Amino acid sequence: MEILLTPQILGMLIDQGYTYALARSELYTDDGFETIRLSPMKEKPQLPELPNGYQTFYKLTHEPLQMLSSGENTRLLVDMEPQIDLFSTDCDDRYFRYSEAFFEQVLESIQDYAVYTTTRNGEINSWNSGAEHLFNYAKYEILGLGCSILFTNEDKSNKLPQFLLETALQNGKVITEEFHCCKDGTLFWAKSIVFPLFDEQNRHQGFTHIIHNLEEKKKSQNNAIEAMSLASNIIETSKEPVVILNQNLSIKKANKSFYELFQLNEEESSEKNFYTLTPGLDQKHLEHLFNEILPQQHDCKNFELRYMSPSGKSRILVIHAKRAISALDNCIVDILSIEDITDERTLQQEKDDFISIATHELKTPITVIKASAQVLQRVNIEGASPMVKKYLQKIEEQAEKLIQLAALLLDVSHIRSDKLALNFEEFDLSELVAETVEDFRMLQKKHDIKIEELCACTVNADKVKITQVLTNLLSNAIKYSPETNSIIVRVFPDPISQTVTVSVQDFGIGIPFEEQNKIFKRFSRTNLVGEKNISGSGLGLYISAEIVRKHKGQIWFESEQNKGAKFFFSIPAK
Ligand code: ADP
Image 1 (cartoon, protein in one colour):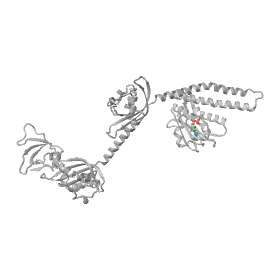
Image 2: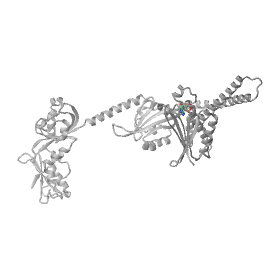
Image 3: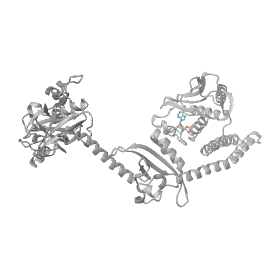
Image 4: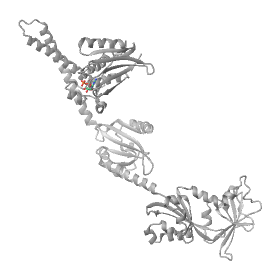
């Protein structure tokens, strides 16, 4: 028995383990067709000798349409030897292979694609729900209409629909991208594939059309192009050197400032490796950035690095880097923005040196002034008026303030040059807190300082420096609650983190929410304290935070404007 080779038959043969087919062709029979007769085989036919009458053999693959449409006037027949029983599989799926209802179900389930068929003249005769969804035409509205209704007026007048059908028939299929038109006239960009359909006698009966909406894809591509061009412009206009590197560290894009910084020629640099282009950079350090930080964190800020310029000048660079995926080609890229902070650092260093020298120089004269005022007060000056005594007292007080300020400035300069030294010793923090609170109670009477919780807890810390932190928090609590008088102190351990926390709470002016993030920065003070005319240097919390950090501890606060502030610091317990 011979049957026409259809894609389904081919599929079944392959499913049954047929891998090759012997072929003999009969040139132009009466009906004008070249007939190729195939005899399916499970083994590869052995050359040179093929069984009688067979001229060649083919490998069976799942590409039926190509095979079937390989020649316009070719008919492929399969020799169905008695042993070939296409329906003998364990699972009898004849129904599924041949049932029209089944194919309809398959077509209906394809929601993302519009699939419809047309007659030879292009009249629509089947329409799946994907097509309904995409074009907004119900089946009953569209069946019988020419498929040109789905094209733009321009394409219609250019006879594109007919051209596509003719080309599909000629070439076996045609794949194009063009605008399609919905029922309400809106257009969308789509990919369309048109196949000719043949009946069992290989007579051309119509076409299958498969339409895929590319609008989303196109939109996201357009967005990506737009974003890239925007990014490109931003990079170009950025004053900071910026470079985008491919995964092999060649330059994908860089701005003028980048080429200027490294004294590179743009044309000669393309495709070259970043390490080769920048030999003056500390490469070991850079490897750490590219091989460890970026693969793990994808983001890196303030990565400091030394650079020796070709003219032999040493520079300090700071890199902010990000690993990203390029939306256009889906490739991983590293974006580096580079800041040359050499001048800023030098200036900062000069400023720090100045503060350090000036403070040192001021310390001795102020101490002498204070001591002299004290001596003069103690000596019973004959006939000295109360006014003289009053002013001597003022001199002593103000000299003391200056001594404290000088001490703060010295601390700052030690912190800046990383020379803040700590002397660790073991002591009970609760005792230290109790003593310090007691000193405060003696010094001032206005505020009532209560210790509400005091758990004994040994720490290994610098007693003097921790006293300094505590003193700062207590004096702030007093200073910034001029209209209330209650201050609450607590010392409590946290067994889980093995730390001990000290808190100092007041009910004063508080810290406005919008200014809370700057409180631990150098010289920072809230506007509120300016308005209320409360003096201060803005250095105490900065120094306290550094001291706590050096103890591997933490410092934080909770505050609401006009409701007070509660400062905490915690350090490891012994
Ligand atoms: P100073 O008190 O000398 O200004 P600090 O570094 O100790 O410097 O404090 C910085 C700023 O934080 C203060 O100027 C003030 O604005 C705010 N601040 C600190 N403690 C309190 C507090 N308990 N209540 C309200 N504001 C505070």
